[in-house]
Length: 150
Image 1 (cartoon, rainbow, N blue to C red):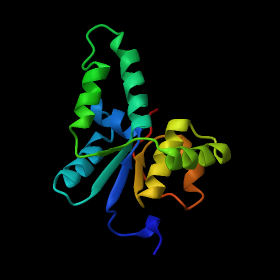
Image 2 (tube, rainbow, N blue to C red; image 1 turned 120 degrees about the vertical axis):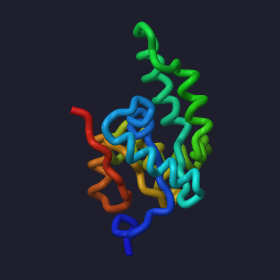
Image 3 (cartoon, helix red, strand yellow; image 1 turned 45 degrees about the horizontal axis):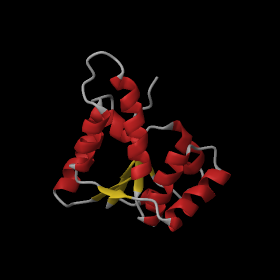
């Protein structure tokens, strides 16, 4: 049975899109919360790359320039660090795996790290980022789609 047709997924990678949806309580936040709850109960494993956390940080930092932001970028990182998510650094193997994906597919480097992390952990990516559509066609990567932003 392929990963994309498996009945119960035991691991997910949350990319920056999914994390930002959850942090901002946007459409799809409930689905992200559901996997966070399952991970908290130790039913599944959640992963994220520090490269994706960097993306969440800089997007939040840009918004922090607006008057009265909900959370600062540093506070957002602290919130993420306290979630039931295993955060992964970028060692040589991960960097090269992401680089191979970036060389072949029209995706951002952060998305390439999320995809490489999902592949190495036999995990499904939770995202709404349309850049992953190119990877989905390969059938090498299982994706759980969140609603895309208009």
